Length: 438
Ligand code: ASP
Image (cartoon, rainbow, N blue to C red; front, side):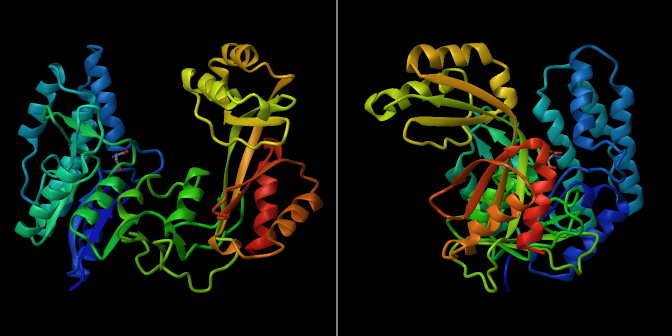
């Protein structure tokens, strides 16, 4: 029998009705043995996620402002779930203790983690599976770095003792035995880590959409669903803005080539998206898998005649960015010039200092800054050996009268990134979609 790890996101576990639907899905296939649960998310758009309510509760408590109304909303949510699922679980003591803890010296991360803790406990009761606390499986050092060997060993030991189990997502424990959470959306990472630890045949990620779309549906009408995508393609698309999975979720799976399947809890019959290793052959590989992008970049254009003669030029330039804590997104170059593409808000926070330091240390002939830049990434593993693809891309944009400010292509030839004035962002995505996918 194959082994599946199934992670269910917040919307999939936001009400008793949704949880019972999840239980049906899990029970349909005996291979679904290790279940990772998020905290209850939003039932309706105007709802607040339990994790956000817990953060707010902590913030109120830490400012000595009454937090009971906010905590009551959390309690009400869980009571509805417990009643609707018809399970025997008394949470009064749990919340009385939490309320006391909030008056003392607990951490914000600990309070936030209680959302997944309790939801996983509930799901384990609904299913009749063992409950395993994530703090016994996922470990961090005191700087917050995930400790691979200790965690994977603990997960393997857990597998040998428990045939079926539910595990809370989002958190683990550090060496001081304090709760440490991942960044937001981190239950996806828990699912990946558990999948690697038990050497799953498949990691199912159940959410409220039917997988990845080939373009943003707010821009392109009814974009095509992506049925199959490689790890690297997905990294490029997620980096550029597509957000269904946590950006780092595939990292633990790369070495073993474990496949992820993104599925929709509310439309389980939909195919979803399969995320496969780069070496797994893509049948029907089309040229372009997806398009995504982001706005709000700035470009620092630096001109320096005979730049390459100054052997320390790049080092000094990078040092300015490093000292001012600026992340470099891209760096297209030509013989006598170089452009640094950075996030607008990072540059804005220290604009004068950065420009002055570049002038002082790198002695450019000219330096200028352009803002309101959008980057659009066109991704496709199939574009590698395809002649004429960029011609098609640039002609489509030219016909739409969109001026391309810069072109970046990584050596992997997995994507082409174009920089344009962000006023044309939506139009450009639509034009590219029509040229390639539709
Ligand atoms: N509940 C956490 C969040 O809202 C973690 C997760 O859902 O993945 O970010």
